[in-house]
Image (cartoon, helix red, strand yellow):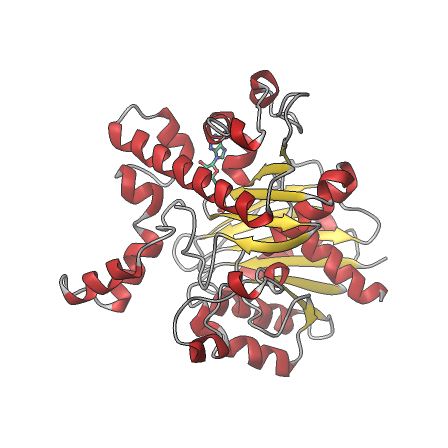
Length: 387
Ligand code: ADP
């Protein structure tokens, strides 16, 4: 039996799970948060119960991983980690599927750091930490860009001088592991819809939408970076490039200032002046919080219309991510005024968070499917050992 460790390393966090080859239920899952400052380690067993942990001075991903390994040891029941699967944000033009990380692959992935400076370096730190901890275990990289790698040219390019396309300035799209998982679930639970035209709305702290035709991504709201498309917790979403030029020329902001503003101070937080957390905004009665939600909903509706147009129609709409899975209010708002797309919501099913939340009469089926990026990584890693 193979035992897989999945790792998702962010700037100051390390999310992990352990799977065995005979089950899609993780043995243990957890998260180290605030690495470098006031780190905490949360650990849950197979039944979702919290396990006791210790966290002293975790200032690097390497130290975080070491402490994770000693914390999970009792749960492994003598099993050893055979293979490690990693979430990696960018696979560039090279990778449309998971890959075993050799020195050459690691070198290639390092050259992509300028394409995703806030994520890629941390993902690679996770790989290096795991290589040091498990020198004999294969490391498998699973990419957020891979699912979108075969977009048609019109959804892959920007209308800027052609040379930049060849240099890799393209609409890559992200959240691919989530879309891959949802596609697989659709094939399993709703095969007819899976063969049709589906829009998946991954609405979490990061948010994007994907148009999927016959199981393949044909368009994504995210483009070159994970900033584009929908407004997010703290990211701006779609923005006229002229705004960036104005901020540089007239307001004297540097590239670093603008990056900080667009990634960390914009989106729901920037608009509401209150919070990046949808629960806080839903509970607030401030006008700014309401306007932030209105903007979020409006941009989703615009993209939904655009994606349906791109596919010549829509057969299914799927919500996932923290907001998509839990907020009946946002799902209801998104589906307002979409009767022209054949969408009719059953409010009691929506309030009960059922899997299908549209009415029997609805021409387009609307579903809620909890996403599971870790499981996509674990399955990919298992395939390497099985294969
Ligand atoms: P990430 O992109 O960091 O993985 P998640 O998918 O966990 O984020 O989503 C986090 C978002 O989900 C937050 O905005 C949070 O407020 C929202 N959320 C979680 N539960 C609810 C809920 N019951 N109602 C509304 N929003 C929720």
